[in-house]
Amino acid sequence: MPLLGALIRLLGARTRWLVGITLLTVLLAVLGLIGWGATIEDTAANALNPVQRVFRQAGEPISNLLNDLDNFGRLDSENRALRSRVEQLEAENARLREEQIQVRARQALLEVQAETDAVTLTAYVTTRDLTGLRTIIGIDRGSNDGLRVGLPVLAAGGTLIGQVIDVRPHTAFVRLITDPDSAIRVFHQPSRSEVVATGDTLGNLEVRIPWTSEVELGHIFVTSGLDGEVPQGLPVGRVSAAEGTVQDAFRHVVLEPIAPLGQLEQVLIQLTIPPPELGILEPEVSAAGGG
Image (cartoon, rainbow, N blue to C red; front, side, top):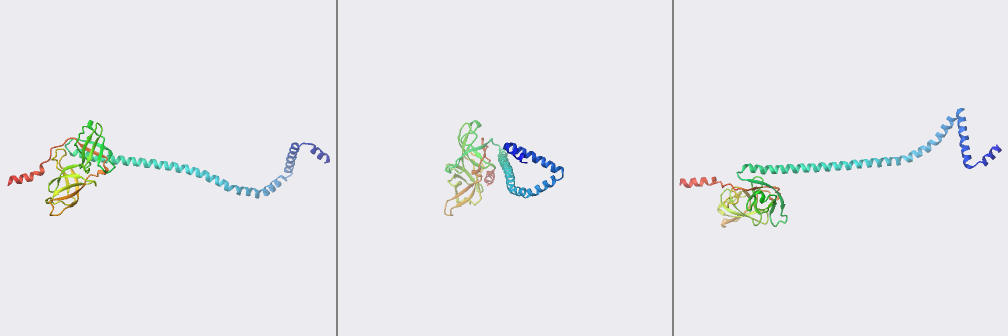
């Protein structure tokens, strides 16, 4: 043994480590052959189990955190994809709704076209005065389409909304009936009294009508057609207020436009004016003839 110890001291540190590993390997092999290897492994395993359990328990929070981070990243990616899809669907639904609205508006104008003998042309509203000082709109039709100053412009349902006041080759401007500079000759439908309806600054029309006309709330005023520029019988406004007393010769009447002038998107321009309908005068003519 002294000789072995002296020999080991003469060897270098690396050589001693290799010799030690070799001897340990041989020793374990011999113990395995005589049946002691399993006992040593079990003893070592039992001794190390608490250590392994401590390390495993200490590592579980880190492992869970890493798993949670991975799951969070995946969920965040899925949420972004879902949000993007929802935005796409909402945009698509809005586009489809807008197309349906435009189709219904165009269909309403086409129905007016089918009911009139006049030559008409549809147009889109392209500009609108948002200052509130004037009620003028621009449309995408012009002189190249046959437009000229003075032509009447209608909304869905055939109601008068204004007249063309300026024409360019591809565009035109329409003064709405509520503009302060607008003046339309109209009939009080029940009494047939003809008056001039002018625009005011509040988005309505005003007329002064003889007290004998017996105007009531809800009565309708229509175009008289006697100016040669606007056809007869187009609805213009509905009585929303009437002021005056029996001592007054005339009553001040406020008309609310029948068409929603603030929501116009498509309009109908009437290119030709059919002759006025004289049927409304037949009962009076017959009565006069019979007298």
